[in-house]
Amino acid sequence: MDPATIIGLLVAFGSLFAMITIEGAHVSSLLLPAPMVLVFGATIAVGLAGSTFADTIAALKALPHAFRGKVEKPKQVIDQMVGLADTARKNGLLALEQEAADVKDPFLRNALQNIADGTDGEELRILLEDEVITTSKSNRQAAKFFKALGGYAPTVGIIGTVVSLTHVLENLDKPATLGPSIAAAFVATLWGLLSANFIWLPIGDRLGRLAELETERMTLIMEGVLAIQSGSQPRLLGERLAAMVPKPTSKSKQKASKAEIPRSEAA
Image 1 (cartoon, helix red, strand yellow):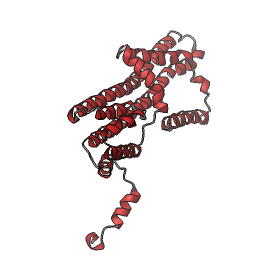
Image 2 (image 1 turned 90 degrees about the vertical axis):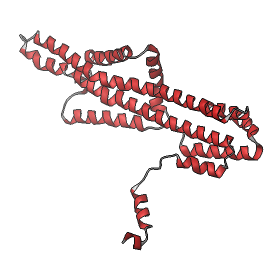
Image 3 (image 1 turned 60 degrees about the vertical axis):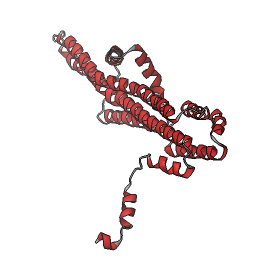
């Protein structure tokens, strides 16, 4: 489990609470049922209206994945592919059928089973590529739904503020209540902006990032499986797959690379 989303949201809401406390305000003044019901209820409703019922259900089911989702590290995938290549090289491609029975990942399991069944390399590539594309589209659709909610929420909040201000104008003959009524009217706008930037957009971005990582993982598996089928050597396979993984550059590495430059070339 990657705690980045939980930590980020806790720090964001904690910062808001700290600001409220420092200014001497009360959290209860923001927890008004009417604007919260409008903002959250109407936002989800218009999100449903702009999508399909099936997409909405799929997005809601993907919500726990934004908090608990964890993608296997590329090194683990590469090591697994190298191990399978070594097995195939020593015992033949039919030995992969036994390996497939012990694999939990359905994508890899089906790929190994197809190799053991003698599926043509081109046909296997088409099959795996189609599955990668389909999975990627499904994962990105959930992210797109929550990003859409992040776009709707501020506008819904403004609508709530306009409705509340209309009610305020109807009671101008009561000056004592104007201040609290106007303050309460802007709570809807606050929750619209708050829910968009503290909830919906971060969740959408998180699901989108997890979708990218899952696509990269499946691509590594696909290329590894196809290389195993073609008889690639385990060591070369590991180097090839490692070259497909983006390597982050750090300042320490950059300094080390500069230090390795001969003085004559640096001059």
